[in-house]
Image (cartoon, rainbow over all chains, first blue to last red; front, top):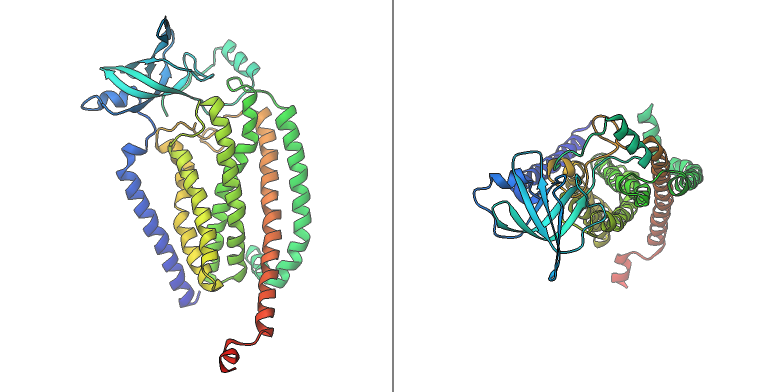
Length: 153
Length: 251
């Protein structure tokens, strides 16, 4: 390779490395803000309960969904867990997505109204990376090799 | 061997001869794979155990998202070849890949939005995956704008190449965004440790549509590269026959 080409290659590589370094540092500094949601365990690690709106992600605990049909409107409440000790009880008056069910991943937008209690403005369903026909899912459940959704990630 | 054939491709005359033959072949391959893929995707593949029929959006969305990143990578590699080794065809390849990649990115964002509403309950979310793909779309647009903003093609190629390589930092961020940060978008299903987590009956039609997208990209790229080369030849001929600026001044 002649020196001129070599020089251009070094220049080009240098530009790329400088850009990559700058972006890596930026992302590292912003790592707390880039996350789309906190899990209940991450929330429990914070020094104080956040007062601004947050997003909470996790699994809807089994047998935790309760409907309260009041005159002021239907309110649903459920527990969000992530496999750790910490759980958050969510109260929500609004439309739930179709995929919402017990054991399903959800992302809840709202405010903390107490220790481990949250009032949601919006509930989003998260789905996992597994795709299979219904018959296969049922067969797996029958054989007892069904793996429940992993938490959070 | 590979180096020789690449070197031959860098010769515009040889490129023209090869492209003239490769264009119809890739167009037919794209049409056949697309027809098979869509038939399997829409009529001959199972509904998902959770998502039901909505899962069929995957066969359009996933290849578009992959091609969005593939085209940007191709653009970055061509830019290196153009910047360092001054291959004129590499600059043309990079320039002509941008609008195709931008179209794939738009398709990925659009179909993703249509998929997100019924499944997540939101058209859009500012999570790491979605946001980084939106940035990719803007990078494509910026790259195209830069080419148009600078009349001198040699200078435009140089600056556009720098933008392409700086923006390339975004590609691994898109790929790993779902692993590095909590995101609404689910992690990878096909290219993951432990093999694909998509059932074989759904993976087969997906590979058909991915093939269709790849050959579609090749066909579009060859067509637009030939177009650009002809336009440049025409511009050279016109400037050769027109009176030079110096003679206009002396008038």
